Image 1 (cartoon, rainbow, N blue to C red):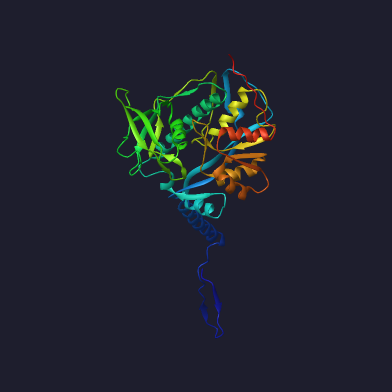
Image 2 (image 1 turned 120 degrees about the vertical axis):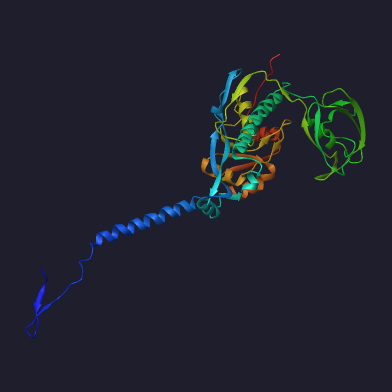
Length: 366
């Protein structure tokens, strides 16, 4: 039945009404659905990976529980050593944006972290191998410091000869330098020290063997000046230790969970020394540590120092041992919250801790 009214002239006019509109709630559901789609698209776009990595603060880990003595001395102390880590991950549009506005996060090009020829799996494997090597060196350096002959090798092997240097045309890759002026060379760090100890212009006799030891020759050459220190001698080669070997008097296992890279070397070395010796090397304090450790006890620079400094700020430690070349940067960032000490070697790190009351007492068994 149609709705109708009576017109003013008495006629029966039919009035047609528009269709009844759908309930408002239907429009609300449509709007929410559209919004959900837009949000899903936006989230998807923001999470698209881009050719960058985000380096952000990681954590401070107590090294004590990571050093397991399976056979040998095992002393406890009140001081604690903490290694510091960074978090590394592929960046998305979202994490890159957040990183660019966060002073504690660095967003860097993928090629800086991982060359195109290196896969993600290869990068992970490389980092794990660097950590494994670092732990071996940490143990070796700790035992050497205690008087054991824990690290040995058969000379310094030439990896690369730089053009236009004193070694150019006189030495070649795979040559093994086994003596300098009649003094035996057991590893490449020893050779570097020998060369640097001599003045530029000094004539030096190098005893050189083929990598298989079947041929030996003497190479006489005049040292140049070290580009980083004009008073030190310079050869012009990149080296590694030939047939590097470790011989440990005690059995220790160093755990590292899923941490990669070599920057915890100094932290492991100090913790091993603290475990194997009487006294409290950490002086009852919380000591954060970063820095690589080399076969000769040299402490090397690390990456992600800004992110590690942010970790230390939150960890409420007393002291932060860092490579001396990065000391100023850390001090500017950390302020007066933590005492920052720059070191270039294991010996300097131990001296710094002893200056704060740390002790290391050990008598090598006969």
